[in-house]
Image 1 (cartoon, rainbow, N blue to C red):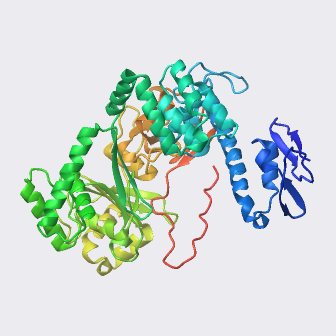
Image 2: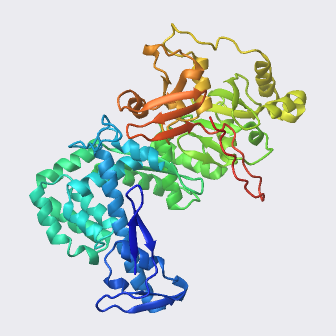
Length: 545
């Protein structure tokens, strides 16, 4: 028997989950687990009873022949949980941000910044939260039949997503006809099979609408880049006209095959990837087809990655550049890169702006600046970009006292040590200045690392310098009143009703319209990292306010 109750907050609590006997027509005993009998899972609808029954089963004692029954029951329960989650997300999306916290107030349409509530509460990326809200809004308010099928466990989330992706903008009558035709078949179709049928039905039902949707997708085309877990990168483009995409792939393939015929030793897939990147990063700008192939063959002969023409931002510890450790560097907005990649990138960026960040024992910024010195051996490849050197104060003192330990970097270390020894000037408040100085902007970027919106990873260098306490209300233009915000999170503060405070330099408190309070602080410039073979210690908690 299962006993349910409500706690003081009105939420459901399972008081007892032991099921000594379950009277369900046609029920069969699935197995014995610690003396508790669990019965009739195949007949139970998703909900508290099924959750309790699943929770009471010892999987190690379930016969092989009943494992698929367990799988199906768990899938139904998971589908219901997904439906409940999406229903809550949809409510948050329409919650009126101007209403009081004790009011029940919903808008007829989603609020402009509703997804940011979920983003901050669940520590999601902004894009992930927006996608979740779009899905929830369509499913709950536009596709009630599909939502009901998910809620009752007839279909799982991936299939509900397929319906939402294809039917979101269709008229109600067409949505109803397609759902009634396909929902009964959906449990027996894979999500891929379901999407194929939906695509054909949608185009046939309204060819003009299908054309409009295609043109909208093309108008929103974009390029996406991210790192894999192995440290390599992925670049993809979406929303491309298929004829242009096919033509681009054909050109890459022809160049790669020509290089292969000319004697390139790489596999065809490797050569295609080299051609793709070379066409994008500027290395092949102005080159003829013959010159591109020669360029590929030269890189193959040298067995060394060819330098791109466009410089990037790279962050790395000086100790790593000196060969003292193999700590990863970082490409802002992408993530960590291997030490060898960081060293190679720095060596090729002589003309970039070189910054230094001197840190305390906890890795946080003490002083930042720029140096015009370069190590011996740096190459004059390309223009632009940023090299940010991370230097613990203790290491700087050691190298300044023993220049021979700095090797080719002795001139760079000496210049940074001279600047560090000088007192800082010109960094106080200037109430008449609206815009920050280059020094103030650089300090805030280096201190805060990324946009200080909750969970945002946009590079601080690509973000706006924001006055935490607005300049128009008397907020001074200082580092202690400055923060980097991307365009979206700046609007979140100025238009979306979110409030931002900076109780101490570099520490931020966001308060959302729905009452969420979120602490934001940039990562330390230098993170504590284990040496090879060492156990990873738990990171120390941030100090309280």
